[in-house]
Image: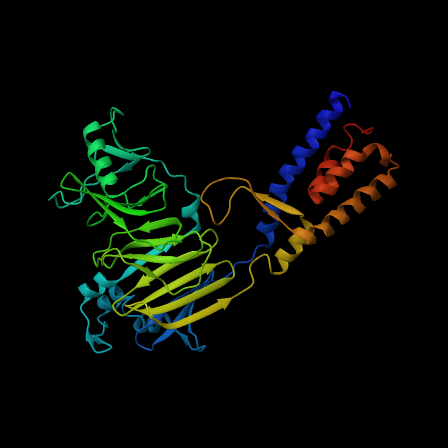
Amino acid sequence: MNLIKIGRALLLLVIAAVAAIVVPYYYWLAFDVRIPITGARYSPVTDKLILTRATEKETKYVDVDGKSYTRDEFERLTPLLNYRQLAMAGTMPETLRGVPIDVKEVALNNLLVRGVPEYLDVPQIPLFPMLESQSGRAKLEMPDEFFRIGQRMEFLDAKTNRVNEERSVLFTQALQETGFAFPAKHIDGNPTTRKAFDEGYFVVDAADHLFHIKQVKGRPYCASIKTPDDLRIRYMIIQEFALREFYGIIIAEDGRVYLISYSGYKLIALPIPAYDPSTTTLMVQGDFFFRTISLTSPGNLNVTVTDRNYNVVDSYKESWPTKFERPPGIIASYLFPFTVSLSDWSSSFLNLYVRCSHWAGLVGIALSLVIILTIWFVRKKKIATRWFDLLVVAGTGVFGLIAVLLIGGVDDSV
């Protein structure tokens, strides 16, 4: 095979690869369907879950019994969630479930923590600011030094990039005294000054043990946290709440979820099914009376409602066809043996995301082969000398067909 034939073969592959990105993009641009996003809120007034279905035009509110509500009715049925609107309108109830309602207490007890698939796809720069948790100042301040935990804990000056040996030794010794095994596997915290107070970081060491590290008046605070022997932490969501009920959430490798409570670092297992955080969004909402835990993935909603002690009081499941299970998606699976996109709903980064159609894609490949063979037969081309073209079409279906048709006249002897 001469250089011209090699160049043509490479050009075929490049065009097929580009077509695998461009053609499905415009296909879905033309035929994509908007799937209503379903959420759930628990009403302390009716003791029922109210579903919110957001479409392009409006949001519909309906309870699990099928009864519909207006937006105003929904807000009155979920007063702890919509207390600002109700307080402004003067319709906030004075008591709820026999408990006097104070707006400040409502705000204090309202919690929201979200774990989205994008969190797993974010590269972590292994440098973290160690905020002072008890500075005596009205606001938190960002320090001039950042730390990392490799074979020891090191503090680096952000301006000079020099290691602060004194602080490095101080914190390293404190970790060693608590039984920390270097290096760290995970370091998770909430490194921002836009919060009322700081709780530092929760760190998984080389032996998969969990530790709490923060700075208190310039000194290290280190605590070892007892965890189940079989717990392997995938990632943690740490978020400071004025309520101080829990430090954050642990998502395990096997899909279990725990809260890290303020009560002696006790781990509270959430009564929800194990889930895959790379494809499912976890949302924990709390109010004065209940905790609503939602697992949402493409095509599925699983909601568990608990009391403040995390005992289940209600649950709800719902499923619906994803876009790939609807007519446009089914047709696409037969047309395209695979698709390549530069973006994906589970990530905020540009990359090459490949989705295979499995056996359904063979239909598109067969149809593409029939089309190209028919064209060659009509044009009286020598099929035996065009084996590479057939190979490309057999491997990529309609994308290879487009490539062959586009450059078929460049070298008619291949």
